Length: 140
Image (cartoon, rainbow, N blue to C red; front, side):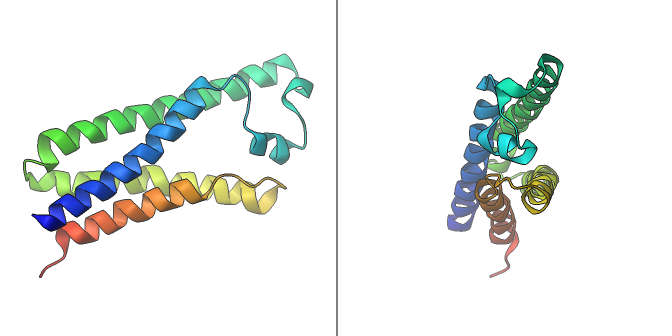
């Protein structure tokens, strides 16, 4: 039971990071400072159509992060905590499906532009999802 609680803590930690990204991207009215660095331009210097497109993409990312957060919380409460075996795999698999492309995208921006995206939070979230998987399936 202690391992299950530790894994649950790790999943909640990861999901709170995801919720932070969701809220940030859903509520922003302009791009992030690292976006300005990546593009070497300021928000107000972008043509209106580019501003609209970037904000739309940010809202999509935020919405998908919020959807994943909501679904994962539901799985935690309704299946994982009840001991349903499929949930032990579903959470970390979905966490990796969301986290690996996120890190890849941030790494691409980090290595190909002057920007420094916030790579640490999604990295910590991805590590926590995978440690949660190991804790859940570790044979004593």
